[in-house]
Image 1 (tube, helix red, strand yellow):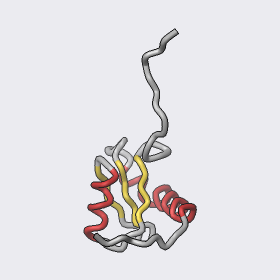
Image 2 (image 1 turned 90 degrees about the vertical axis):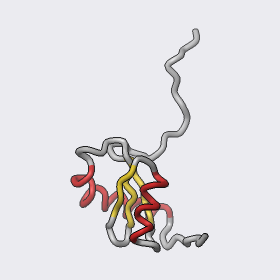
Image 3 (image 1 turned 60 degrees about the horizontal axis):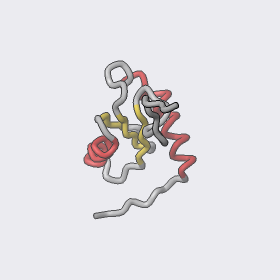
Image 4 (image 1 turned 90 degrees about the horizontal axis):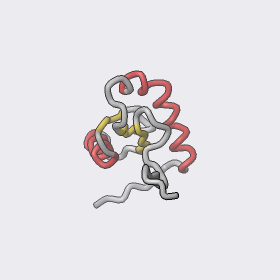
Length: 91
């Protein structure tokens, strides 16, 4: 297994990823893919959509083995949610 070294800081990766998503990709994917993951190569602007992060990244890496990948959940501000919520409330 090859370990890819990041070429960008986390901040730069996120900045470029959000810019590409907002300016080029959102209009292509948002209509019928709510809740799916888009993996974006921040250098080429190519992307793949899948039901989960791992599948989207693997699909992108098949075509761009050296991709610098940023992922975002379509229709949401973040890919994953931290914490939990419960519909059960005890009083």
